[in-house]
Picture 1 (cartoon, rainbow, N blue to C red):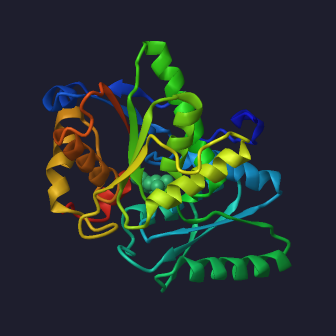
Picture 2: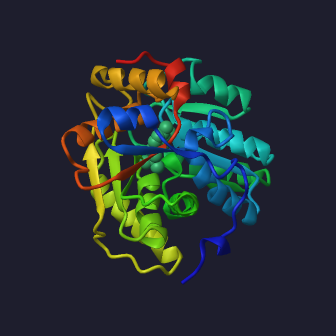
Length: 323
Ligand SMILES: *Cc1c(COP(=O)(O)O)cnc(C)c1O
């Protein structure tokens, strides 16, 4: 078996991120809910993509790339954070974004400009079209002597997922230091890499702990997450069952991906007012409201300590209204 530390990694974020119990919320809902503040990871407005990018961009550097491409929706947090991290590394960053959703100069689009990332909107519903365009541009740039690195939507490939297995290792160390016995770890699921990393990380560093993905897009994440976790485990020669137990997906999609849902708004406001924490209407607000519904329905009965990974996303608050 290989160690995660055998893989090249850059230090882009400020880790470990804080872990603490949400005292007021835990009291109200009668369950210990802990938060892992990956929204405070120190790059831009924070977010989960930085853990992935520490591995992905290290790989890019090791391959001698000077240019990075990625994609996402118009308000992609992943694209923005890729632009932010690439800028620090002196790499040119092209963001080929779907011309869907909020394309105005709001939210993450403002940050993309500040970080100097070059945005192109592509009028398509298919990421395959975008990947084809990326490679076409990469071939052109190669003629000028540039070497390109291509990061998929959400940074969700096996290497990106390993970033989250490393995040669970960090969580396991923190839990041990304070004598916390975790029962369940959860996060929003948008492209699958984070949840795949939680699943693999739990098997590696928190055996017996369950992983729960809270789906905010309508892709078949049971398969996507299991497959990504499998592939990431393969990179580390870690034996992971093909259909892992202790993993489940629950969806709280509302009307669709990136469409704010009015039912989530009271929970977003409650979290802000009771704990001072901002959630966003696309990912964390939906995941959080989905999680609290499960708590109320008794999904975690018999369990004591639940950890919610706060995956960031605050820029969306400045691009769209809550539902
Ligand atoms: C991308 C993102 C997620 C989802 O993570 P995936 O690894 O894509 O599933 C959750 N929350 C926020 C704020 C994100 O930007």
